Image 1 (cartoon, one colour):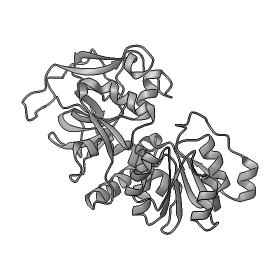
Image 2 (cartoon, rainbow, N blue to C red):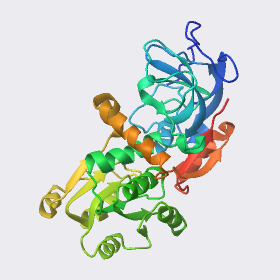
Image 3 (tube, one colour):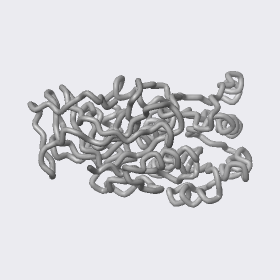
Image 4 (cartoon, rainbow, N blue to C red):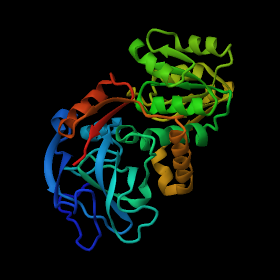
Length: 350
């Protein structure tokens, strides 16, 4: 979280294209809990200082995520003390470093993740940033860290997805869903995407989905069984929960793996242990945020894989719209509506 009483340490080397780091910056802060439009205030605060093991990043763009909406509402699992800045992933340029930093340098264009980056400058642990793929624009790279690492860990670490398997992706036109579709295709899987409307179906198809089902219009269970010739989905990537989870248990394959990623549908699913036993499938949880602290080696592996795929053109974050920094609440409101396709990005260049 950005600390309003933090100042730039004069002993920390800093340089950027425009000269020295300024003393003050603009930052969006949650001053009272509620919907983004009412909760957020655009304030002028001191630029934070990079401490030991940290870097100061001049923010170029911030990708909006549903946790940002939950942070504004006070419904996220992490509840910072008011006032605080939301924003959990960015792309920008390193302009200063604290002591004991290696692997990154002033002037590097990086992506990274930490709560509190919806500002013109942000301090992050050096371990939480990595070089942005040169093949991606700022708007595209802004959405790489959370969604694509979540999808990568879900598909490769937790599900051990294999080429030729059937992958069912819920919310396949959303940020993390599109990431899962693209990574599934890159892994050689056959992908079935579930979207919320006919208008979103094209995005899932463009990302490589072999079959697209529209929630509420198509029978999901029958559609999956028909597409797979009765085999069912070998892997289910579910960031929705609720009815999507229940339907998935009815069309999952023998020895299938149902990856629980989140509950964007608003209902936390209960695992039917008896059904799991009888149908011989697995329900596997994924909390990507644990990996940097517990298995940083796997995080480095994921970053390397994603960079290679981006440079090869096998993945490219889909950007629904780019919103100017001074209209950031509009981005979070649009995201909360569920009407967006891919990522909503906030330009934050100072």
